[in-house]
Length: 639
Image 1 (spheres, rainbow, N blue to C red):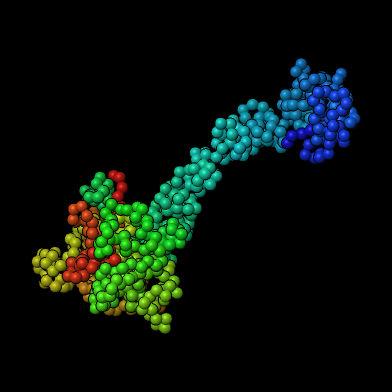
Image 2: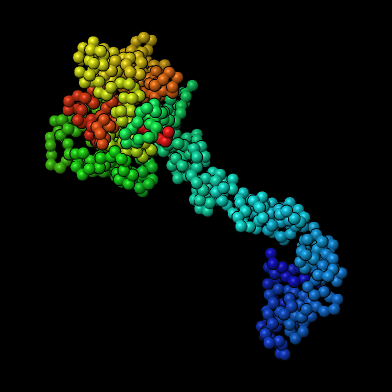
């Protein structure tokens, strides 16, 4: 704080009066007009008592020097104070030794202690309102010379000599400054030297660091809920607890549950190469995509596009190398993507959509592929055996608020007892089904990879694609089976073939529990690999798990969360960490990469729809979806 000149008081002590505490002029008249006979320049007005040399005055007491001549304060004469000195004739001047503590002073150099506090030499402290001792700024810092005041480090903007002078900041060009390498969380940083923006403009944070938004993380993924909320995770879609961090053995909250990230990915043998990513190591996700991960995708798109999940715009701005964006309505993938909650499109194959192929053609038929429609009970999809996406009779796992479900479900009946009854948390953990090819492919692209290809699924399982074709089915069993492929088949391949092992429960194929659900009441002891179909046969129709839930008549209870069936594992080598659910739970949609220079949708892997008649063509269309199929992503990294 700037202080007023000194005024001699009783006993010879110097009294200092702060300029902030005195508002009146020291002179009532001289401050307004120059005195007669004065100097060429008028005197300066005085704004505090006492007045300094050259300032206007009325009487000697107005002046610090006690000399008021011709209305102007003049410097002291004689023994009042040596010129430029401290006010003590025996010390503190340029020709005298420094003053001891208690002597009057004008500046720090007058004092032996190096501290002139309120006009008196004193031992410097960290609260005397002056920059003294070894301080680098007023009452802060600790330089290498001078009496140690033990002052605290200085705040940002204060003077410094070294980083140690600053409080959680660097010393940059003599000023305490926040930087992205100072070892502290400061400015707008979300963690130490990472995240946030100005003023430090720190780099994005690593996995496990604290974050407040996805942009804080190098992975663009900040957990939005759950036990690890506000930390960076490795993959965008797994930044939500339910369905993002709940894959593995046993149900959420159950004793002995062993859960991990649903985005965990495992390396495919280095000999396998994807032709669109030469030189990259290929990884295939350990788990199927969950409904919760798709919800995170849609939420992020809504945040990006003002409340509307414009996935179509995102793909157009981030076009994957394999994407088919051709002008033709029948082949274009982009046109089937949502632009928001409601997106109307012309249906080029209207007579093949649900509810059956008997639906009559109409001129320019319209359908809705918005996010309120395309996932779950509505949206347009082909009729095939086992489509099962109607909410009243099927099992879509993507949760919609009940009011939205009733509003957007053409078959909804508010009085029906058959309605979706599972909670969002119960469904988000489960594998996603009833999702169109194009939307699934867009999801994997946003999540940092691409939808798994026919080739990578074949390489991992060592089972040919499309074995339900009668000829290949017979060949797969060494020509010894009947052409109908009856017997203990899973997905059209033998009970034990490729890297699939037999899935039995006490020596009995676990699909047989379908016909006696009371012996397998939906707990993990019976949830190893419960495969079933409409008729209870293992080799026909939708093969999905069955959980007996007497309190739920929504068939979504048949779809398991990834990893719950702990016997459904595939390993390349003994001891490897396994991929889960490649045989069971859901059949998987894929990209067919077997034709050079182009990708197509490969339909359902290891299932009849991939190879049987008219269903084969439908399964390869971008809008195709069924209740028995989901998918998983693959990824590419430097070796």
